[in-house]
Image (cartoon, rainbow, N blue to C red; front, side):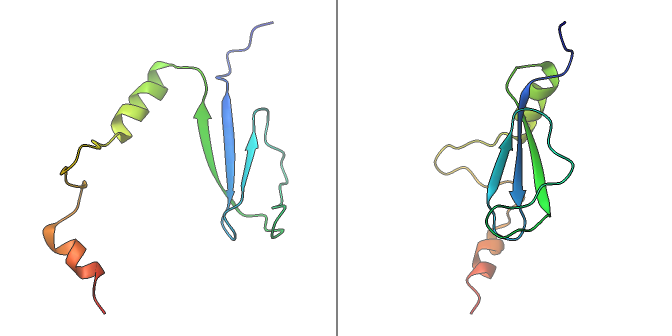
Length: 85
């Protein structure tokens, strides 16, 4: 029986130490980090099959990587502010 569910990879990133856990099936209800035993994760879903919604989301998030292109939402003084000592 075919499933209408989009196939993909779910990545959980531990907010305490940054260790990643990957799931291709359902994510368990209770997950703990193997490194620090934290139970708080940030979740990212990455589809492995193209569909219109996934393509539109990737295009909306894409940035130009050409040399000399400005970063979005960056003002000329922002970089100077980062060097404050």
